[in-house]
Length: 328
Image (cartoon, rainbow, N blue to C red; front, side, top):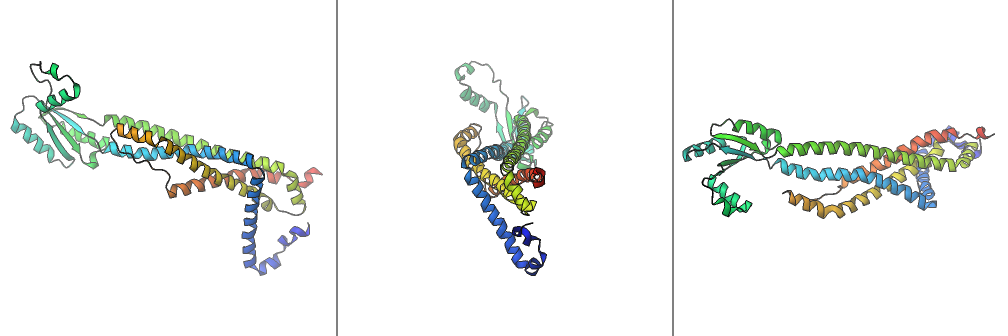
């Protein structure tokens, strides 16, 4: 073993200065972290292409996360828009109508009750359908009177509104009822399916990030095989040799995460107008939000961790396989 690394085996001098050992530990890590940046800078095009691939791979699940995050605003708006329509029996008197309105209004599950008479329903249909002149030839108004019931927030979900509908249909003055959020149950099932698919796709893309970094570090190790053999000949430990490669993986992941954040910001800027217009067409107000500070930090931490994990798996296999005596 050469004098270059012989002092690392001497425990007497190091034990006498534990503070010095701690300082030197961080200095060595800082030196090797900066040296790994220099290695990336020596191959700018290949490094940038690898980071771009990582950034795009991370941008896809991040974009899906933001779409689901902003979609929750629409789901929340629709959940609170549950409305029950009760069609009344024919021939009810004014007193019977007022009685059932008062009775329904006393339910704790009901937030608002609106009565629409037969005449009001016909006038509204004339205005909306455009068949006003043709409807004037009818001998009898075919539309029944209805009661519009808006549940409280607690019963605005599809399950709660359906429970309230079953209760209201028991009223003798009610012919039948209709729940206007039945379509929301189907939409919720579709959104749940998309969320599961997005989770599976995100998992596959994150695995792809690890594999890309592992393969990149493997090629780097093979290109520096002779250098690693020389270092081991003069007494360098495996931990000392593998540390720059681990920092390289971290830098790949960190810069890839920043590229992913830039890509996601550009995507949101590009589709913001279309998403807001779609939300307005669906009768909802949407305020598009991007990654907040905590989500940004999670993205950067996750990307750096994936970079370290991919580099660690490659280093643990290939660095330990390179031994000088194998070449003798």
